[in-house]
Image (cartoon, rainbow, N blue to C red; front, side, top):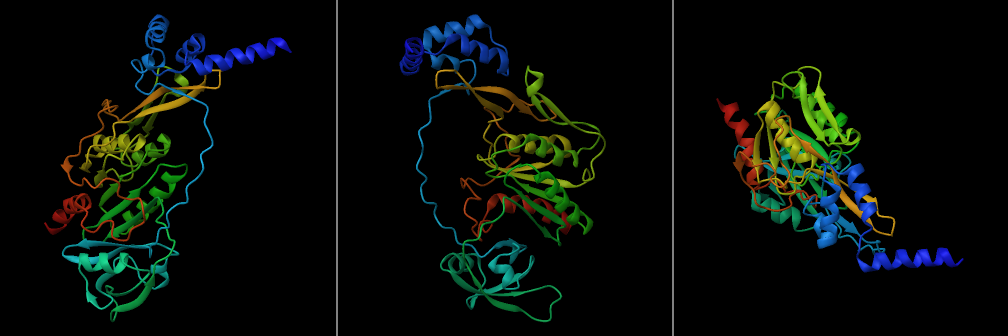
Length: 371
């Protein structure tokens, strides 16, 4: 019983001292680091600077201590009617009515033109005051082809916008796709939605990637394949280890290769999402609108040090077809607009009202539609 006790005590002392187990660190770097570093260099930095020295090799290198349980804080309630308002060519419209929402139950549809709220003529300020100011509002709208206006009361309750959704502007023939995360299966849903809009006449597409933290690279690549002008790479995950590397390519010209495209980005656009934006520009000439992206395109994984701590390292980096280095740099927009911070946090119906980035992106195709 004495030896196991002494071994446990030694491990505990090493963990508390802050000194890292050098051989474990060398093993992890050898087997998993994205780039190759000499063992002598790693050992020298450990001796000279300890854990802080590893960050000179890999900016994401981080020693993780044992986690303590965190008590969850009560989340703030979010009220929404499930209607998304916006401006088009001088008018106010319901851009999107989410299914199973209070707005849908009241009978409203995508594209309804807003006439009044609670008897007050529709203006952006009126919409903000009337919609966000309480739990209920009365909306009057007109619908193209309908005999007369529709007026109904709309409640606001615990309704959340889905992470990804789409709507269509028939006049400018523009599809708008909000992509909040590239999760498993998302590409299939996105492409099915875009295909439906393409078949009814969409020739332009706007991807809103603001606050998208990335997700699964393969899902982002699957959407990019549909915009590829020819066979070739669309997205790459690069590492010196084959197990962490992947090149995603298109086998032929994509179905939507002829569509004009734009992508709205901000500082919350990171990882696979910012590579998606740059790749869309490389492949389809997309116009990027908004703010510079996060510049965080490294895939990071944690590995056990065997003493109750872990070591995070970069195992791979993501690249667009052009091979542009985006880590620490991000991508610069072609049209700068925004500066609002996080945009899609709280399912607000007025998110796109007065949104300079959305207006700039939509304006690209409004101008084309008028010519």
